[in-house]
Length: 129
Image 1 (cartoon, rainbow, N blue to C red):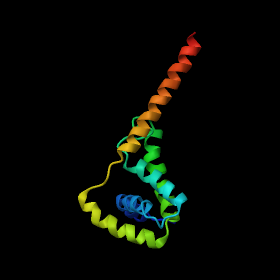
Image 2 (tube, rainbow, N blue to C red):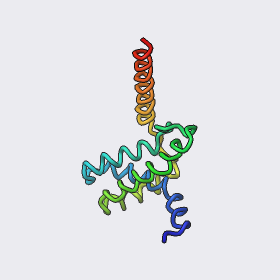
Image 3 (tube, helix red, strand yellow):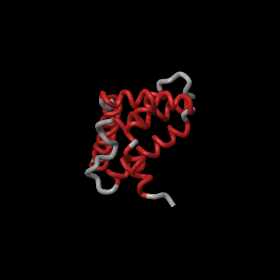
Image 4 (cartoon, rainbow, N blue to C red):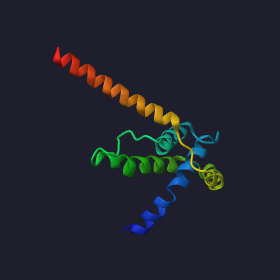
């Protein structure tokens, strides 16, 4: 059985691991599938805007508690050990400067919300007519 201290320790290293995965995704030695997953997972992890706002009961926290760790875990498993070791070393050095913020991911998420709202508006418009 996994102990709660194991989970707390992993959660404490989550920021450093996310930064390491982001750095590894930029390494040319990384396979393209792993690169894509790593970029998507870290862009969402560093995005200042959630896909599902935290104000939505249960679902709002589900993405933070499940999607982000799962995406980062999969990216970690797909990253070659040599690339990951180099990225972890660089991540430890960069953490003192602060975490990056993915403004591109925030723009994509806002765009998705606008598309959803536009689709809902169109559906209501056609239903009312």
